[in-house]
Amino acid sequence: MLVDLDELYAAYRREPLGPVTFGTSGHRGSSLKGTFTEAHVLAISEAIARYRKAEGIAGPLFVARDTHALSEPAFHTALSVFSAHGLDIRVDAADGYTPTPALSHAILTHPGSDGIVLTPSHNPPEDGGYKYNPPSGGPAGTDITKRIEDEANRILGTPVQTTDERTVPHDYVDAYVKDLPNVIDVAAIRAAGVRIGADPLGGASVAYFAAIRDIHGLDIEVVNDEVDPTFRFVPLDHDGKIRMDCSSPYVMSGLIELRERFDVAVACDPDADRHGIVAPSTGLLNPNHYLAVAINYLFGGARPAWGDAGIGKTLVSSTLIDFVAADLGRRLVEVPVGFKWFVDGLVDGSLGFGGEESAGASFLRMDGTPWSTDKDGILLALLAAEITATTGKDPGQHYTELTQRFGAPAYRRTDSPITPERKAKLLQLEPSDITATELAGEPIERVLTKAPGNDAAIGGVKVVAEHGWFAARPSGTEDIYKLYAESLKGEAHLEQIIEEAREILA
Image (cartoon, rainbow, N blue to C red; front, side):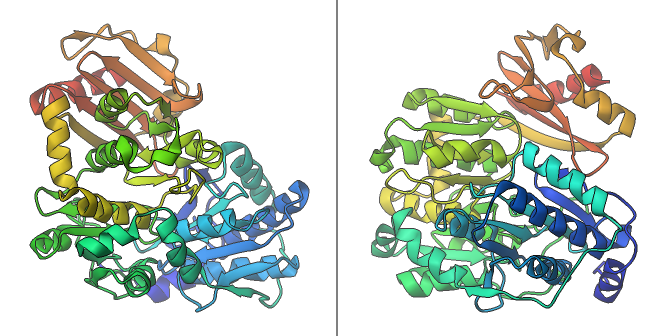
């Protein structure tokens, strides 16, 4: 079941079998399928260098990589292109791995800079990925990625100039870890003696949890510090694949078994932009549940300097967040899937928090200025420890209290195959195309193809009734569509919503 690393590296040098395609999180693929090869990385790197020149971006270019096997050769391919352009390239001083949030933090603390990170996030070991973060620090918007994608595809397969790597060392670990007290109440965690178990899942956060322990004197046990690009130590996911998804109960089974040893246990995916939270009281928290707990805590008095900052959520996140926001009297901004939609709000402070149902979130510093404008799994992991320290209750207990006040929504996401023709139709749906008038016994109240928070196309559809909703959108990188559904009436009603959603979509 383990990937053959020699075969993977050999395939990286072969001819590409597909174009450059940017989804919600950059270009992803596998050398074994010819969709992530040296040619792709050369073309994307050259396109980014040209984009920087056209936009007058003259500051440092921060370059990061995670622990996936293909991230290593791609890292050196990219450096050879950027060096040929004479750019000021900043790489990890210890030749180590760099989490996506540490890259975002570096960009924001060096105005006029930008960066790339070579990662396919939580994807299986045979995959590779390439993301670009402009000077705003967060994921590039569609307008930027389209320009880079189009230019890269014009370049793909043509000669690209490279040269020996010329880089400048940057201490990502020290810069990120020493700045944490400005965004997390580290002193409270230390004073309360919160026992934290941390599992990097073989990813880029491995050096960070140890540094946080040592620099800030916290009680953190890194339960596994092994790095192996086959990820042989990660439990299999629901479909029998190795996938480093820290929101999956299958992948997190090892940490769940250890939960009695810690006051809170946490994990991150390979580039540390996602979080997994295990509470002694409830076990692994559903990402939606933890987002609601985090929002309720942060806006409920823990961050008074944030003023009237709003709450950002994706429109496939739980309605429980809506209830919490309304109870707090906070403005809720509902956007399409993709963290890029939160970047501007976090930069200007109009959003205090942005979160996705897929276990990705970030929030402002204590003083209301931006910390990271990309998802930060380390930050959300430490927030779980802060909540435990300052309230005396773990995040699972806080979620239980929220359900006692607002009810316990039943939520599920399922992925199903889809043909390219149906995929195209799903992307082009208009509200008038949905002819159904009822959903699970209730009148349909709204049909959305644009997000209410910013009027941006959601790349699919959301159908809302009084006590439930569903949303469907195609994957940007695979021939599948994602069906999200939630019921405020329980599991049986949720099953009915999912069944009828499939009929409506068909």
